[in-house]
Image (cartoon, rainbow, N blue to C red; front, side, top):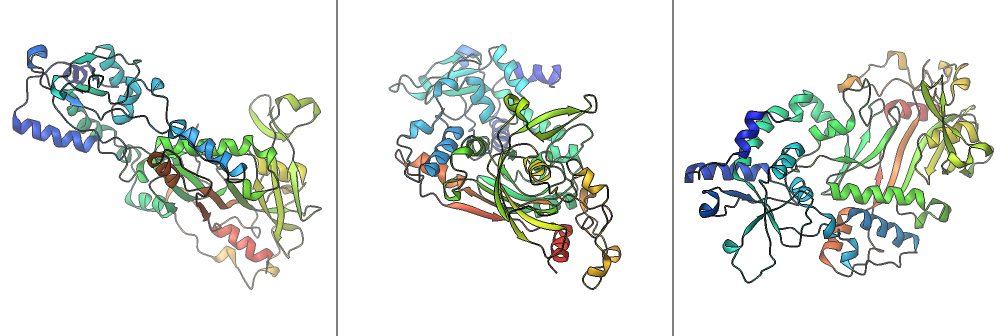
Length: 486
């Protein structure tokens, strides 16, 4: 919240600044709004006769932004149609300008300004719009009119904010810099950045360590999405955004969109993957998004390859204190969600254990864990939620089979930031950890897709190259792999 004194200082008119003051303010404002997509420029409009010499900061001219959801949907359809689709009109992938309000445009151009402050500026009628409807009129002669927060923007319109807003960024930067609030040390920042597997102007892909929560919640002080804001924003004013999830105890490939538009594209791709799963369950080439997990399960499925199509439903247990996912029966059909998983055996020479490659064709909560435990009857090692009965009689793998290769009790443990430990938890220990890892992923090059949409009115996205990503196993899973395939 902005205090009343600061608000009064922001909103009250100020006398024209001297040239030295204006130069200083110009530098401050430029640094504040330095972002790739919407680099706001500091510009003054001379209104001394009307406004008592009040100066204004001018935001960039409004242009229709790319509709990320539309691009993602089009990408998915192109692949499912056999690569014959095109975006025939860039307008089909652009946002409808009538849905972009003045408030949305200001918050998009000025992400560091608190939304409450921006709304206050609109309520007090301190925001002006310069319309480009009269192209023949010189820019300095165009009148500035008050604009409401819900007024729609037209192509070329420019929003003007009170010049005094330039004072806010420095105060805000000192008081709410996330690195300071989170007290991230250099070691912690370097560790988070060491998890990166791939980065381009559109996405960041990391190898999520087991034990780190992806999102915040009760009792969670440091989640990956918040840490990404502090450590992975780099030169962008926007923080990376999650587009899918991984369970806290699982590991592997996690994709984040670096801007709001990119996140919308990826959200749409992940959503279309689930919606269209029943139409292309057997053809990998038609799936624009492919994810492959490695899992070590207890037991062995009857067939070495197969397709699991079992709907899932959420049930409440422990007198309403907790919930779990289970395979739906006939009476739960209406409340269930369809879930499809492909699987195949990829290795194990150790009796009682099998390594599976799991390919989820839909994206449901705990889908792989429930399908393995309840459909294949082979729970994942370390899954005490859905395979607790099997783990009741758990015994570590006999050391005689592994003493020549590993001696885990004597191996030194690495001290990692955030109290993480990726060394202990293999099948030779008393309490194994969850053996579920997102190993491989294939997804479209979203950055090139958006560049094509912006540059060409008729763009063919069917031949767009894909990104193929691979994440190494955490050390405890690698140890279990070596033990079972020794």
